[in-house]
Length: 146
Image (tube, rainbow, N blue to C red):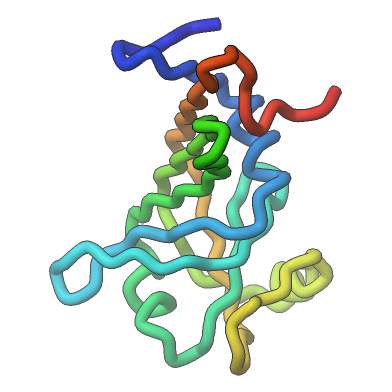
């Protein structure tokens, strides 16, 4: 196990992807009107890509298409003082090819927000990092089942 300077466990890429596969909600970080913006989204990890749905008229679709974005998912247990966080950074694009859209529609991806979410945004992470904090008793949060 490798620790960073703060004593947090550094997670490897495979463990980061395993944690992303079990998470349902994440936050997409993008630029809107030259300022940072953060929006929660339901998502899935499809192969190596993060996929989420958004409305055709959303500021997210416009701002996150063709740009570099950051994405973060986590699981925190405040009572146990444990948790993990995974951050992925890479280019985002709107899915436009009919075959790809058909494939993405088959994913188990359902928005929690009301309204029509008929556009898919695909993020191709180029950098994936993660950290986990141990509780005072030494147990770990979010350890994937073997």
